[in-house]
Image (tube, rainbow, N blue to C red; front, side):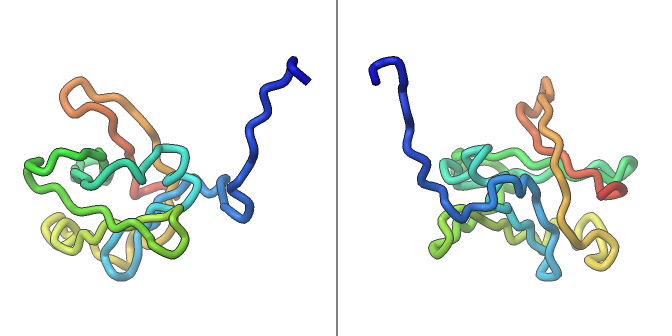
Length: 127
């Protein structure tokens, strides 16, 4: 059996295909398991949020920089261990985003920005 390098699969029951971020009634972002696991969110403590008013898009950058200005804390689920959330009430209020307009699950687009680094972009006008 030396021709194989098997790695045991241990994520039974995980919704790995669920690569989404949800916008919840509580004005928070839910980091669903597929996104959380694929992007290694468990390794981050903070999220920096950006808003493009013209294009109605949200950008999220993950960091461990405790001094990152305006960064929100990521709450990591203790029960599922494969999800997280970002409580961002002030972000939604400041940017006049009404919860009923944009609720639901969104597929983020990963992109590199020369100034901001890696961003996960949520286009609010598309599902």
